[in-house]
Image 1: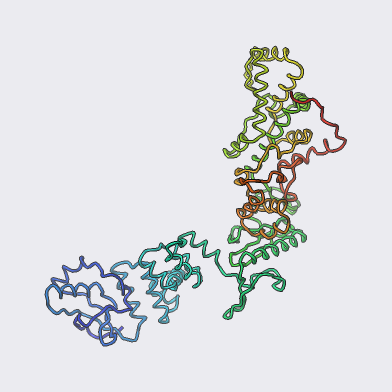
Image 2: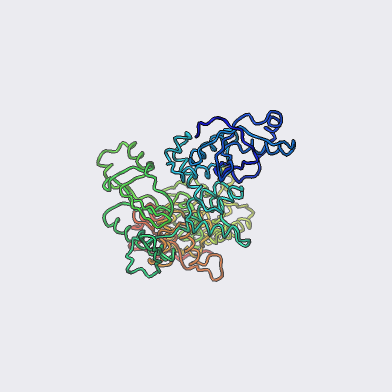
Length: 584
């Protein structure tokens, strides 16, 4: 800045410099300073520089507008005290404008962005800008990123027509994406994505270059567009790329498993692998492989990690070195709520079968009387589960069949003047004798129907006994259970979901969607089952609902399959046919 003496210059020869931080903005509010200017003129010097034969006001825009107003009202020529800056130092002029304006009135975010961008264009480095204004370098980089936006986008932000979260999302967009976003914004028949939706739109619309492919480009059947200005081609179809990339990831997962890695986990596409949330651990000590997949197609394989929670358990445990070195158990494929859901539906189906086969129920009841169970005090089963699971079970065909039988048994007692609401112990021996007397008046067939209902009502949820009853009765769960929204809501494990896709649509289809979100893979199941539509398929059952039940992931905990494994040997070898006595 020049060290020349103060000069008084006529305002008629002045204009707001383009280097002024607030150049081009609407006229400022000068009500607070005008009374002083009207009485005493401008006391604080303005910063000016020679621009095309006139004086450009770098700092002092509000004072200039106040003097113009005074000149108009008094009809007297006005002059202002000025310090003249060197005409060739644009960076210094911008710095002076920023300092002056920030001191008077905090600039808008966009004004700051444009000013810092001017400094960068004039040769100031990021560290220099940060040091000069006492801000963090990261903040300067963010400012410069926002200042590099498409001009149309910047104007919308300056006019406060779009919010900060949207503008930040658009800094991640390519120039082509920014132009496409502007087209959507200006189109009356479409709606441009805003905020979080804008960020997702930008991430999902990124071009995918050929260097991201894990597969052999020579056998890729899709179209690849050449990029004359880049080192790599661009995949014309993102869907075709992801189908091929998913198959390649599936092959790599198989290779890891063949090498002895206990678990290979695919993160949701776009999710970051934050290394600070994991600890390194060798394959021999239970380390896992985590596969990180970015929206631009990049796939990173993180070998030999466990989650921080797993690491804490290992450190806090008192097990010996041999136990610590042993391979860790594969994590369960079912969440707790899903295990409850499956257990309750299997329990409902088992009860429905038992009430139709009193001979089996009677023998099972006697076994309970001899060996006991968690329920034989005796009390009726009372489901404790999430509301969605409870509603699903109550709406099932199995529950309807059970209620139908309960009403029939109640009518048997009613014929003898005794009320019956199901198992409801109260310790009153008169009540016991009342029921006993009624039973003495019933035929053997009627008593067997009562016994079957009581046995079904006191069957323990999630027990091996449920699996035994389903096996012996030859139950087909497809008759009692149908795929519903509660099942999809509780279905979380991507390994199990992908295995379901494979069992329903085939291994090739499953590999093609391996890296898709759980939501997208569940949509494949919905489509194949035509859930809720005409002609919905009823023949397919997930392995959890088969008889006997099966797990989807080898070695993973699966409550119904684990229970059946405990008792299978008792029933599969040398089976005797179930008694032929049926319900009346």
